[in-house]
Length: 81
Image (cartoon, rainbow, N blue to C red; front, side, top):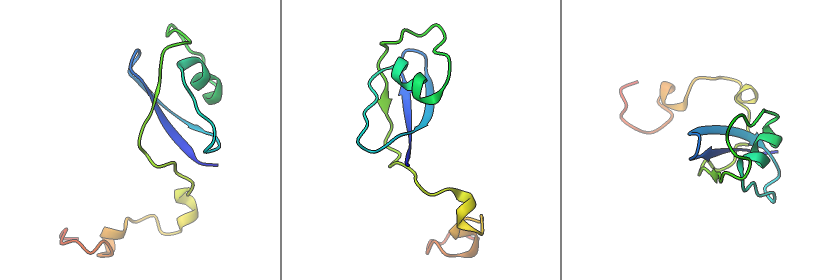
């Protein structure tokens, strides 16, 4: 299941949650429920925005070598590594 980042302008917090692509989270209360956290003083109906992260489904632990591609010259850029 993909993970998504949501930002709440009212409290300045960003939370990461997992949910199916078809689900839509509209407010802080829904987001906190999904994340399993206390909403604190922020109103439950405070709006949230899904950030353009693309929805991550691959865990870094499943990739084997944790070095970034550019560390081995695999990025094709002249980054000096």
